[in-house]
Length: 475
Ligand code: GLN
Image 1 (cartoon, rainbow, N blue to C red):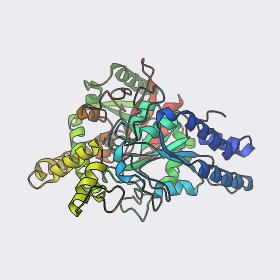
Image 2: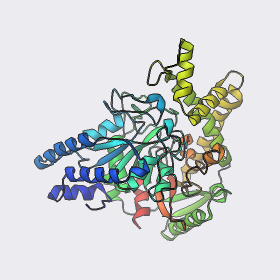
Image 3: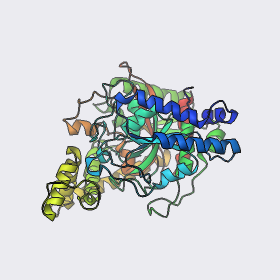
Image 4: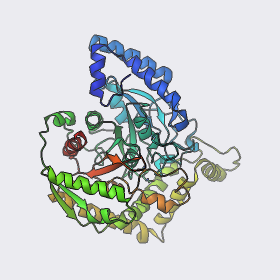
């Protein structure tokens, strides 16, 4: 089987009959089995994927297939799929089954995407290395001693390793982009509200977005145009019309843009010198190609990570209160009283990082500290939003590295949450501001590891962001 870069190539071969969906599914299943050491799939829908493939092959023979026929998709274990297990990488949801399907996923299924399985992730999407999963860490296919990033680490790793063609992840502070940088895939976080969150397990509701992980910008565009748009089941899903992104890509005539890069991001002491150099080279390339590049100051860079962690833990402490041993999943067998059902189920069911965040979030929302932490962080968020809008008035995009370093070793940062949090320094910005952002593979480090570049765009201007991204990766 060919190593397909785009769905269009797959569909081309499907249309001539040189392959069938059945062959694709068999191919990925075989690869999943041979890559078990990477611990990327929590469940593989073997029989079901085969049956769906046969059904879609039938439709192809009649010419009635959907737009995504031939797309074999992995889904992060935080997205509901009716009748399928769903644990958010947590013991507290062990044995839980979704009662409905997330809108974003349903739209892809309606166009004949095939889901091959449910992918490992950090517990409740909290983490940057996939080491916080209750089901063991996922590994990076480029170097299995290293993390794939997080929290959608296994989803990016699976796309890189060719265990599925694309994947759906979720991004609250970089969880689709940072693992894409670490694994060498393309990760896209839409504008807040562009994609419905109905059926996505909530971590921090004012930040969360579902986003695709792919091997080509073209596939990102094709998945996005189907998945995005208003949804009556999610009041925060925006009503803005969704352009035909893939058509716009085809029509793009190599337009020139204005790109800002953040001085503080490039001067950040934690930035790996090779990644810095590659970012500078890219800036030079933009200039050579006739784009306008501006250096801008963003004095809030040191505040993005603290602001993000105050606000997301506050939201998480509220969102995760529903896992109480009564409504869902795990209930401590030792609990005798109602109080014990709550405390023991939560103490035993949640992992360390999730508990740390629930406690931190509860603290910053508590009566005596609310203004000092939560209100203050909200004010900082407003400043970050305003400053970002200001930059994006004159500039089409903001360029930063995706992460300050390439993938680190398993265990390297596991005992130092602050170090771990700093790997999100460039990605949380887009979630705080609500703007769309993409991570593109930029190069190879001397260690042999991939690393990424990030572009943020204007809210609801995914079209230009995708067009420009495609210009960058094509050359
Ligand atoms: N690494 C970040 C965190 O731990 C981002 C996670 C995410 O985007 N879900 O919060």
